[in-house]
Image (cartoon, rainbow, N blue to C red; front, top):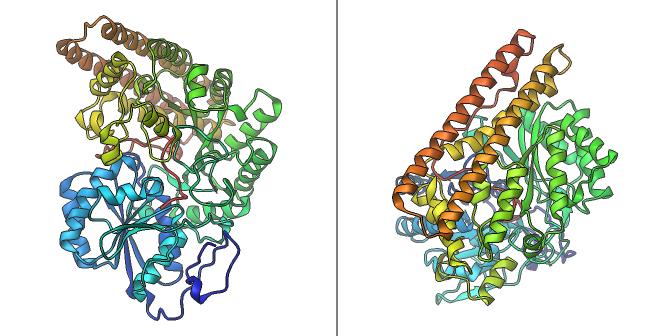
Length: 613
């Protein structure tokens, strides 16, 4: 049975998955109990730092009267010291972290400082790493007291009450914790929340903290996934630690109402729908009917917004019905889609337990381009089972299908707890000690040593040591800057066409610009392919050397800087032409976010879900 905020001994037994926001009558001053959620800006929460799981938990706590704050923590020791000083003054009764593989080390360092400053304050961790590796988190972080498993709202409410009332945690579902002797205990998991509409809308503190100006903010229309990709730790059919439905969705009316409130209260209009797959629960008639209802609701309310979603390639076909739905979605504001393409070979798609075929992947890439929708592609060319043949085939696939982003050709697999690929690596003897000690996402060996050498070579080539070792970007090279600018440029195209296409001459100007951009991207795909193959040959022939690598860094940087300059100049000229035609280009302004330590936004093909703490 899932417990609501009232503990089991004080409330009637409810159906599994039922959740109700209420407060134990013995808690007379809930506002005096303060919870601080610290958002570590490492890895995947930096382009737009809003953390939706935390926002939901804060909203639930406030709904029953508890005090809760959200505080961002920039990457770096100097920022850790500042947040410790703040917490000394704030004096929280509970400090919470959302833990992902990329911020485990940062979390341990900050927890050590917190334990010295606030020796009696409980420290709790959750998130994907906590959900699938709770005992390991406590073993490797001696300063943490509690790890939450799974969905956070019922657990944090239960936990806050128990701590307020000074009651034991022995029968608190959904946690691992240290007992009085220091031993690690694991309590049974809670069932999944059945009805997501009982949750209050998430707190938008981080949006307000940024002056209502972020690159985008997140909306969760569903939780769970009916796929079972082998590398993914988002809750899906095969990795659930909580009983209940694998997929649960909110109704279109409530989703549109949440968006409308954000538009009205914050004058904000760019959203990232973080559902694992927007067209679930079935990827077919039922799911697409729901997606169409959301889009139509946006249009009916007259909401002038833009949004991004995640889709699966096998769900989309070259049919009139699917093209009509994409037309409806773009009319309502869809401008970017994340698709986990992952591979250009049938063998690797089988390894990742993908349902899509190579042909499915080619089809969705083409369909999205035809509808003017930007493709944010997940792709995994380097992994422990990579071969020279698969590298070559994947490079050709990318050259022919959206190969302008060099990072797609050189990306390494990140491994997460709770995934099938980790189990396979373990059984094959390819899991390194670093993964067991700190959940190092690159804690594995390559079956082919030369492939491993090439993977590390590329990781160093146009990045820095932080990215090579921990996946954290502390300096932004032209390769990364182009990747970010490419999204901005695509939204420049799609937003202008959507808003001003009725003005005479606008469509002609935009179509010509699209052709220009496509030609530059195609040429970049050829450059990236030649660059990749030259390095592959060098590894195979043992001819890599440090001097050549230094030259390549300069060459790649200059090449991408040149292309950025070309595209920006042409975009400026297009903007002037459109202005002369009467289009108010500033109405769709979208600029690059400031470079911040911690990295670029990651794809939703691994960790990351609004469903977990």
